[in-house]
Length: 485
Image (cartoon, rainbow, N blue to C red; front, side, top):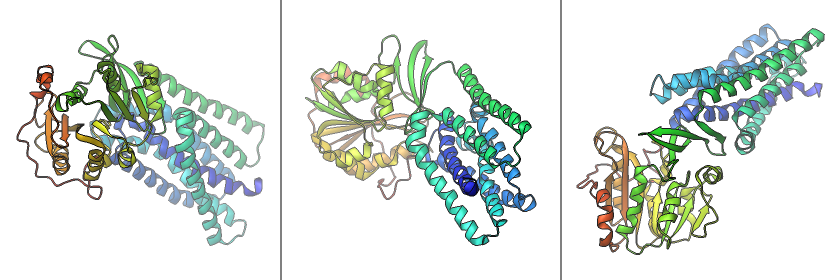
């Protein structure tokens, strides 16, 4: 094993470097979200840190080509790593409350919290090349070999973190595990181990473990309203108690955005925009079957099943963990025979499902971001194909109606007009038309028979229709989608 210790070192450091990149997105997501802009910022910061690490690591290796120095570098990286849970509460959370610019928050906090350990881990690769070169191997061959091994480690770390570690163990346990692995690696690399060194390493290891657990304790004390903090394969999910207008709600937050909430006393859904989905029974008389894309805490499907005893609803929810949390925390009964759950990506379900529905609801927003693939002409054409004759689609969007923040609804309105025979818009609140808000978009296939007997029940909602809406934007396609996350 000693013979290949440098190869093992660059493999492990490469793997942990990529694990850190994925962990960074999970740690930051409750404060800045997980849009493309945030991912771009995180990746850019990590790559910058790594490039500086490669450069300075090479310079240091030329000056002091000793395994003992490389061992100490890895130990420093381990200590920076152990600080991540602590810095989440002491740095990221307070900084996110200072400015509303999510990119600036992501850039600065990622550079401090994750840039430093990434910088250290990147410096190991050129150091290993220098130490190998001392063994009189060809420098080009050595550099290529170790770079390849480091890259293989990065690949292994990516798959391991994405498919196994994050959904199975959670971020803090991963940080603790990678910290211990780095400390052990540092010990293996160190020359002339003696009693004094062993005692010091025991103390350093204990300190690192204490720092990780201290971060967890401080987080829990600062965030007492959080009931559950769960990492799924797709998102970081908080179940949280919150008060609004003197009403206590249980909420589900996904990557910084409020996805679902219910009244803790009555178990009624709290989001006003969800009430607009009930308009399906006004627009299409005798509707019996529905599909909703985006389950989250399943507040609307539960409302639907309770209100309509003669109707069925399918749910396309990609994240099985959300379904499990909906059962455990929000009272979802998956045994209901009128409920069918498809743990599948919403666009994929639209593309390939052979099922037919009277109505389709789309509720796939995460905060103000929406998967662009659910906004395009091709997606709507597939949705229309899945609708029965005279079916309707009701979509929750978040946009301004007028002004600089109104591009999204204008793009979507043009797209729906291209696909459906009739399109309607409803303003959920009475906010200023230039304010970003919930807007309900209704696409109508054919000429469904309106149930006039329901008008009085839904008069208040129907009176919020935005009439004579105009759009100067082009149709959104899979090839051209200047919207979404």
